[in-house]
Image (cartoon, rainbow, N blue to C red; front, side, top):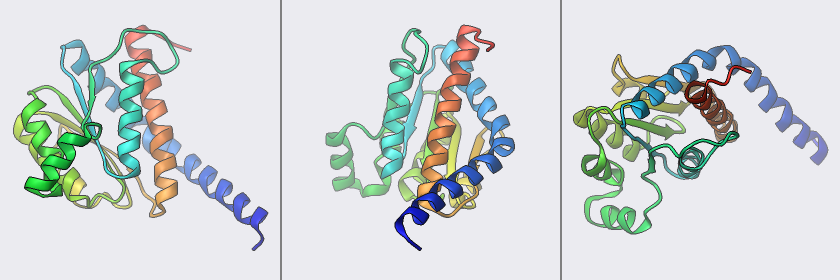
Length: 197
């Protein structure tokens, strides 16, 4: 396969998956937006975590919430648990890597807050630890996973939400996460600002 064909194939794979996800994810993303808006209107906050590329998505989502997506609005209370390199490395050094998020949630999370966790294949120990800590603190959980959702899905309770990308390719999963985040931010703004278009 020549280079042009390989690149074309990437676009085709991505567009096929996006089309398949439209029906699968629209309702859970709408439900996630409602959960987040409900928490924010009760003066709760959103905690966000993920590792690797998902950490970058976590920081990006928090930026969109704190600043703005497409419409001007007041900033929304959101914290990325991936951003404080001093805290992350201190926790990892002293308590093992799987506690990098759970210790922060134990310190910062309050009942009624929402944890939004990204995990490409549902098996990341630090994300699983974050979900367990969030459950102990009384947070509601929105989990974004790829593949079959792994151990993350097994931990979720009835009040939690799962936004799953049933695919095994990391690039396709991350692309789908990003599109889902844009849909989520648009839905949040629509609920908060009464946008109907």
